[in-house]
Image (cartoon, rainbow, N blue to C red):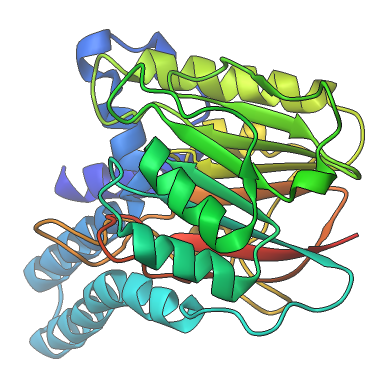
Length: 316
């Protein structure tokens, strides 16, 4: 039974999109299982070893145990290794590229000074700040010369999502709040592409799962309606293991690195970087693009935040 459960857990990312059809009280269990599928794989491996011990010779059982230990260790160590490999402030921006920086500031607890310095040193063209505040936005504006396209929302504690861009890039009359998510959802038509900041519900709670599924569907519908190059950056509260995100990404690319850099299920994790387990294991933050080539990308630590920041250099 344990082996069957482990295999089912491992395969949960491929079960399809039906989270919203489950009873509300248990619906959150499916996205939770999907995002933690490596744990299910480890459970399946341990169960398989137990079967081997019961049915095979001792030498075979010992070998299987060693292999299982290595596999289980990998499920713990690989996310950290991937995160470290992709970490670091990017170098000088190449000519002809657009640099995007996105940070969930953990209810605006991230260091304003560190955020401002990071955006300035990166020479970011666009900055997205989720769970931010007016003071945090002002600090980044002062340090970089970028401007927020909308005032920061205060309708909920973590509801402020800021989209900061180079002032000369914004097309007059194009700025709006899409209101496609529970949190602020700023969008602006820039000179050569459409840019939006995203922060969705977290499907870890039974009362938020339905909203998260709806938000992902609404974002997908909106993205399909936009003509030309598009960038969607922020905290999607979803990993590549979630069918809802993969469906949203139809026609889009998740910019996680340059050529040869792991992506998809093996992309560098961004959360959690604080709390009881300050080792990122999930890639919840994404820069989704259409009409661009991902020249380079990575993650960067942000003092005071429970998320790693993500950045990407995009080329037309």
